[in-house]
Image 1 (cartoon, rainbow, N blue to C red):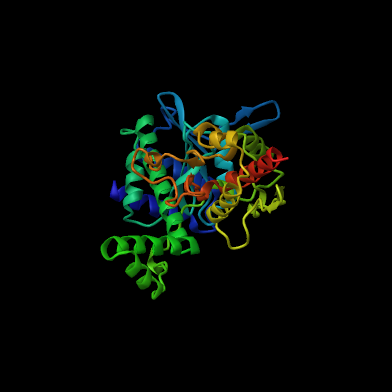
Image 2 (image 1 turned 90 degrees about the vertical axis):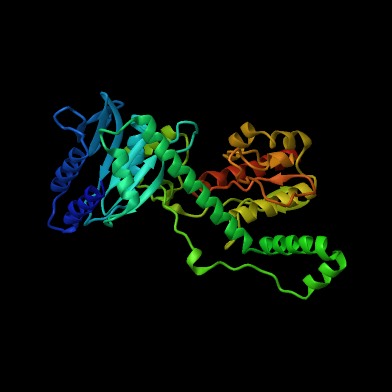
Length: 380
């Protein structure tokens, strides 16, 4: 399989020349899937077949892979000389949504694997983003999973789920790193060190020693990570009616041109509350800052506080996978032991979730702003 990935890189790389046509690249891709055991003869590789959508539109995916007479993977191709662009990713997601497929491949000057979780309302996202580099272990593994002989839809779903969770954990680690180097992180580190020293040496000695130090954390240059970009950050051409229809079907309003979310402040009680983050501020910092104001000023009614401690309401109002607030310290970690809430409680009681995933900011930002407006209405 290692040799096959190297051959894959070689064959795709040949079409980086501007003299290569889209049709030649299409045939090359079909041949590669045949090397993986899929057959055009048996109808397992379906190329550029029109699929009617409503009365006025149709889909024409570059390739559809069929297994046991069912469509399982849709493939979008982009000639390597042109390079993968945002529009290609948006088009692939459109196909996945319209065809109700969980898996999609975008192949051009790299390979991107898209996955649509079956147990949530979110849109497909990139779970694997590979450069065409020979010897890639991830590339070898992907081709192994795509092998027709080994392919089982449930197993491929489990493979994508592992990639998804790994990406989620990486994002959580990156968010935690960003927080640790922030002012709040410095305060947390200082307090943690002081508390530990107080146990060993007494509070007075610990406080005195800490006052003589300047404690902070900085990011190691080698520790910077680049996470795969997902389709929702892409610019969307409003003339692409099929893509717009797919986005409408998904039930999520896209953020055109990837511009930052802007919303007017609201007045709650006698305080003016910002409904979007400041320039240079992390969204997580904005959430913590806002929740501190609301909770310390008793601006959230008790009934709303109770609702925010339920997963269903937090999912509906804010797009979260965990309750926004938690008071039970035994529930601060998920079943896998990953901490899903910040360490320091707000107002001495409420732990706020830290599970704000960077790739879903386009959902969180407008929902959080709408929730703040809801809180303003509750305080009228």
